Image (cartoon, rainbow, N blue to C red; front, side):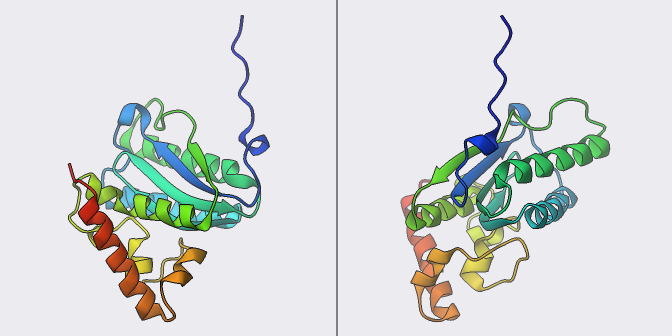
Length: 192
């Protein structure tokens, strides 16, 4: 008996919901080897985000996986992630003369049910490099949305998380509170 076909994700994912999207290198292999790889992926993210009308609130690109907090306004996260992963895999295979699967199966999509859940997930996403021991502080990792919220940096990929407005009345106040929130979280989070 043959395998059952997979259900298309657009039939499962709720419109106008925010999702924690995760993609992992096949067999946990490294998918970013140098700055050029990260930059290429971020350029592809911007193209896919624009094409598929996705709000991207938080992101981190790790050496062997990626995390996003995203709200699709167009045709859902499936087309966004499909295009992004496919175009990056093509780039990766050409650059590294690689044959095989770059990504480990389909991406994961976890629906978040509240603004606070989205914000807490953003915290989890942006602390990934610290938890992995890649950097001591989240601002030291170049491939994340942390500096947008903590220092007011402008990043074309990032749409400001609506819950962020609760961190203060002015941009400077929000940035200070965001930094303090992360310091608190880092102290509570054991680093390997």
